[in-house]
Amino acid sequence: MPNGFAAPQATPIIVETTAAAVADTAPNDSAPSDAARTSVETKAAAVADIIPNGSAPPQAIPTLVETKAAAPVAEPSVRSPVRDLTFGNSARAMVDEVIWNMATGNYQLYRTALQQGKSATEAAQAAGGQLAVIHRKISDYTLRLQAVLSDSKAIINAAEAIDKPLEQAMLEIISNGAMSDLQKDAAIQQLGTLQEGVKQGLQGNITPLQANQIILTIGDRLNWGGASDVSDEIKLVYRSLYASLKTSILTAVPDAQNLHDRLTNLYAAKSELEIC
Image (tube, rainbow, N blue to C red; front, side, top):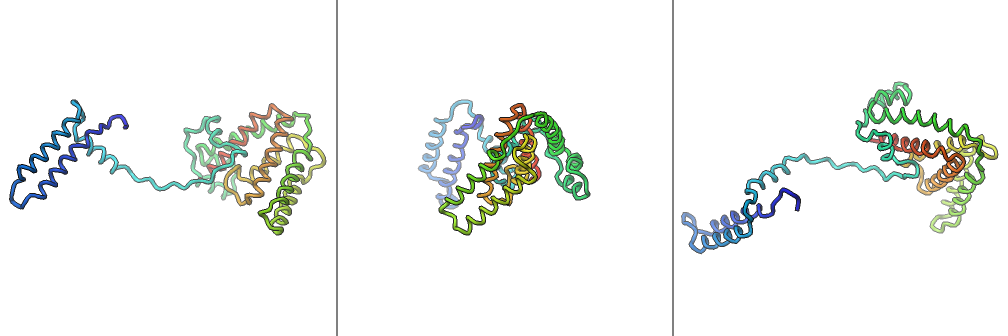
């Protein structure tokens, strides 16, 4: 039972209600019978026995009821879809960048500025709040991460990081008994288009910087774990490809871990703010 609310305070209401009920049974223009008075007095005595000395007066109950009645009724909240944390953790960004206690910013101003032809960074600065800080920090971490990856002489095996997860996804589609042949053909065609798009302009092995560019493209396509128009089956493929490339980057350049995580977390936070 919450502190400050003594259970016995509710009992005087029981006595008053009982008394009223007894009074209702008495004939009009007549006083309650001795039996009725005895019943009420007996109930009152029983109630008094369980009330400890020094208990709060009954007036505390109407105060609680009045407080509850005066409280505004909140509108039902619209719940966003559960985000896929593979692509970044927005809550972590709020803590790491110490912006959790800031106002979110005026998204209407942000959208208006974009419509007026301003860059996303300029529009975010017009919006202010978390949105402005997030855009600014994304620019900062992007430059720092690119510098670290560019300095690396490591090479990533494209066949292992890109082709292998896509081939595995294709095998799973072919062996999926719940899909019709028509659905399988459509899914395999989408995989082929995806593979062609990811590897466009790439030959042989790739650098960590190139792998990171693919990751950013996938993150944007999947709205950084938020709602998107990508089918659930293809989302799984994107997820697997993203994880494979991320592992390859961080294996090749371990020093990129912190910058990469902070950047992707900020992208997730940006995505979440922009749908509010």
